[in-house]
Image 1 (spheres, rainbow, N blue to C red):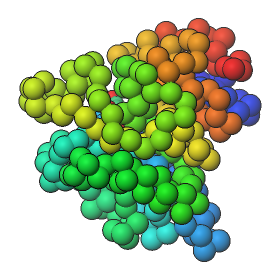
Image 2 (spheres, rainbow, N blue to C red; image 1 turned 30 degrees about the horizontal axis):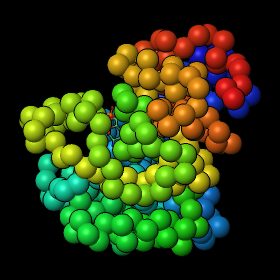
Image 3 (cartoon, protein in one colour; image 1 turned 180 degrees about the vertical axis):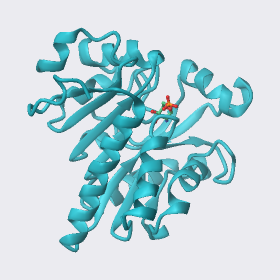
Image 4 (cartoon, protein in one colour; image 1 turned 90 degrees about the vertical axis):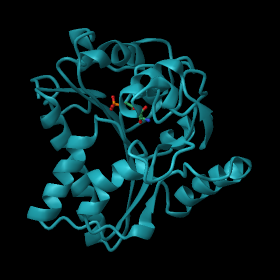
Length: 267
Ligand code: GLP
């Protein structure tokens, strides 16, 4: 991590040497939280993300489970989103992604895992989404929400147009998001048009938020999310209102940010 970001001040943006270092930092923070809660006989509620960005975080958590006795016995998870419609066993489904990258390799209690359904009947989706919100509240809210950022400025699948007060709901995917997903689905026409996602407000209610962004292709959107006017045109911009939010970026994703941002308030 660079000099400014390693200072004791709580900064909303921390720049790391590489994605690996940033991912380890977040994984270790998650592990500390899980262990602290376990020592108090309490559960730890994690909000989890998919995409290529958080993979290293999951890898480090799995390593700590195997080598350092990190148990997920007290962990409850809520994933941000899922394509719709999609079968859980489909190679592109977020159910499959989470199983392959994390859940199959740790001792989490399966009934503590929650991922929005890609198969709920369309007419039942509104009630299903309300239940998802209620369940998060029933577990006392999300302690730490892990996020990536899409090139449209989306968090979860809250595309441009998603207002600050949105909750879990069915959404239409932006054409750029579908284009970015086409590599996973083989061709654009196979990418679902819809998704179920937690809303901006659902995410903002989390006690801590950690957003990871790596690579040059994220540089522009990271800069806009941090410096443009806060608005539904750029849903990630709302995160600046959160009292315990941190961006963890590598040098490439930080490349459009002015050096001064590492020491200033972003409001
Ligand atoms: C998808 C997910 C987002 C994720 C984004 C970025 O749209 N729904 O939660 O942040 O992809 O993906 P990647 O990390 O692969 O760049």
